[in-house]
Amino acid sequence: MKIELKLNARIEIQVEEEMYKSNIQNITKDKMLVSLPVKDGVYITPSRGDILEVFYYDDQYRYKFSSKVIGRVSENKIPMLSIEYPSDVERVQRREFVRINVMYDIQYTKLEARHDRPGSYVELEQIYEGTILDLSGGGFRLSSKTVLSLKDLIIAKLNFSDNQIKVMGEVVRVDHVDNKYIYGVNLINVEESTRDKIIHHIFEIMRKQKRTML
Image (cartoon, rainbow, N blue to C red):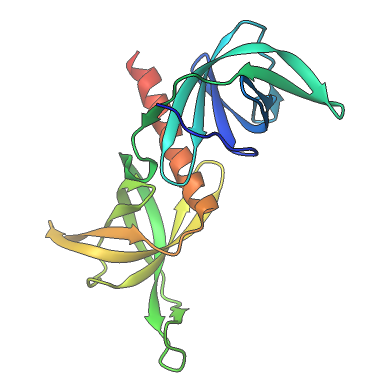
């Protein structure tokens, strides 16, 4: 399939099972300039003729394509890679629907509607504990001894290896299992940058699981 790649879009480049961050700096009919791939502050420079596996993101989907390295160039003294514009692009599973099983202990608080300001909420001080059982870019499954009801709103703190993310969620499903409650929680009012961090974390786990199985 063909899609329109956009300037300044975030991409990831896979090299030997490792994922490096980059972005699109310039686009012509048959090639693109991208920033040097980087991971944890370490830059790499693939050689001319290397075939790269590139992942591209938009608001809805994750795409994958192969591209040959044309060479290294410099614009305004900034080193970049020149790579071939893809002739074919594969759409990967819709990003927010990719769901993985996890086991994260988290803390969360409840939100209460403000009667003096309709549509506004106040975060209550009481802190509750629970365990996330699975995670996606659109929500998570939460195990907790705390009683929640459908449509309750919570603020959850997700602790990833590199940062902590606070998200707002709405309870959309309630099950009672072995003296605990299992809740389906949908993320709401989430900034795309925050959703991207969650999705990136999910794909990192998936890649690690894939390497473990090899």
